[in-house]
Length: 297
Image 1 (tube, helix red, strand yellow):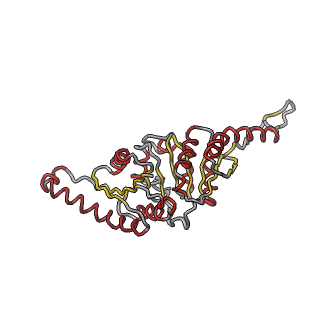
Image 2 (image 1 turned 30 degrees about the vertical axis):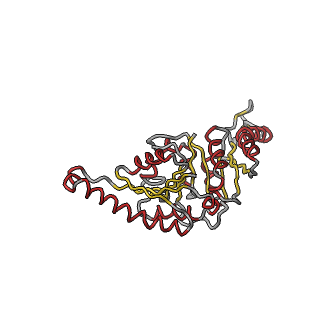
């Protein structure tokens, strides 16, 4: 597995390194890990006065101050990492380097949701998500997982986006640990529908309880059935959790209490917050700090 870990010297980057250092099964498979630091570009006039050689040394020196300690920290965990120094617009360069490397995963540390700023992750992480179609794992939790086997949830809805998340989990099981518990999550509609009046003006439910159950069963099978067949084909066991209500809210509440990492498929790819993640993933990200792995389809 080829993993790109962008670092800026902040505590957020350290969260990503701490997460990676706990992945014993993955480490045993000798992953290809690349560390990246992107320095802000020195303004043209200042760069001209400094000269090309001195400007390059400044970039390399600042990057090394971030990357050298990170390489040592990973080495202590048994991970050999290659360091890359770059400069320019951080999100643009991270996305470009990920493409150049053909990275299987971009691992980013980020701050938690800020109601005041209206940011889910931070400008750089948000910018990367807006520019890449590669899987991105965003780690916001302060504490790294305690063990190798992660409680891993995969949100599915019957679309190709949810199936993309399932395929990623099956292809890269080592990321989640040899004893990972993989669980499919789906939220069925609760069918709390407006009531209608009968001829006598009395309010009656739109659906009976039996009709609601039948509709929910049909929706669940449509959403979860294709994912289960992928697991059966791969001969990998999985659990199932059926929730009811608003998808983003219910999945976030479940993840917060029961999961170490959550995978979601997303079609989002654009400059606006809801477009970058998709509406369900946006609601999840806004409501819990569980590490979130976003897989594009």
